[in-house]
Amino acid sequence: MYFGAAHLFLALAVAVVAVDPRSVAGFYYHPRMLAVVHLVTLGWISLSILGALYIVSPLALRAPLPAGRGDTWAWASSVVGVSGIVSHFWIDELSGMAYSALLVIAGFVWVGARVVRSLWAAPVQTAVKAHVVLAFANVTLAALFGLTAGIDKLGSLDILPGDSLRHALAHAHLAGIGWATMMAVGIGYRLFPMVLPAAMPTGAPIVASAVLLEAGALGLFVGLASGVGALVTASAGATLAGLGVFMSQVIWMQRHSRPAPPARPVPEFGSLHALLAVVYLGLSAGCGLVLSIASPSVTMLRLATVYGVFALLGFLGQLIVGMETRLLPLHAWYWAFADSGWRGPVPSPHQMPSRGAQRGAFLGWLVGVPGLAGGFYAESIPLIAASATALLVGVMLSAANGFVVARHAFRRTPAVIPVQSGADAPSASPSVDS
Image 1 (spheres, helix red, strand yellow):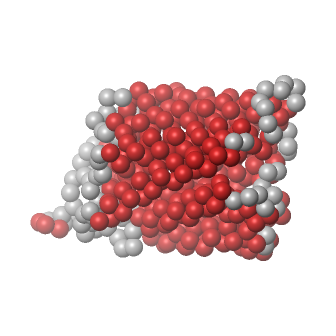
Image 2 (cartoon, one colour):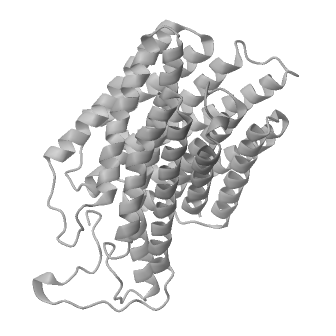
Image 3 (tube, helix red, strand yellow):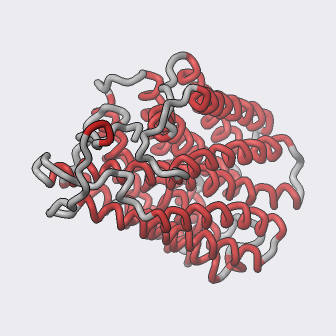
């Protein structure tokens, strides 16, 4: 349900840019661009994270998270809240945002409380748990600050000192780094070894990334909100150091890779999406460093938009596609196997996806993200429209592939697949490295 809603929100965001690129071009701080940004940040990234946690928690974090009636209400609250926030941004009517924001906060707090409670006794590294707990604490703070800033902007109450642009930047960085990036890094320590596959990292680097990312996120939040440039620069350095620690661990995983299962297709698009996301992480980090030390100018304003595209779509957005490409088939396999009475046979997770849809989705992201960044920097309307169209095709094909995979989870009569014998026979259940 979360993944379905997330795909709809992302497709809507990209379609708006493809159909009417002039509505989001130019300086980024205007209502319609903010509506599109929230479709990506709340609708795609955040809802995908919440949905993935129901799979990742038992699979990678060893923390059971069975869904119940309350989780359905939390999903509905989040989806309605995101829709309300985006629609009120689009029509430039702030009065309805507070109620919508409260719905989003309620959904996030429900899922966060359940995850933290289940994670408390999970047999995984404490530092990995810290990433997840800090991420939920940060997103709650970011949401409450965004709600307060929205009320302040109405003008009826003077709550926050400073201008609204500073408030928006502080809110965005706390949510982007403290919530989405913190969660991606923490879960990445567990999921990347399963996706590549590779050895599982342990030890001090995981602790260091949690400390540095949290210091950077909170420092950027305070520095941007208060206008203290020195704190912004120092916090950007801490954030880059934390990301550098994570990237060093990704390199370590690559050097300590393990043999992939023979049935795994080549190329494996989940790994390609994930590795390309790491490249965009480095590019967005470089852009952020330049923006933190350079003097304001027209060029820096254009670079800020590129920074947003690289960070939100290239890194976080594409990382979700990569993780989803691997998680959904595993989830569908377990569900289908349970529905068969634990007897099978059911198709292997490698047989479930549509290879054509996966290939098209990867090409759409491969072309669309750098094209959007270049189009916004050069203020080229045709390039923005063409790149958004390519990305929209990628998003729709990714959604179609997800639908194809999900059908296996709800197929009551198991598909008949060839039964092999001997060394070539498939195992009773797929390992997380499959």
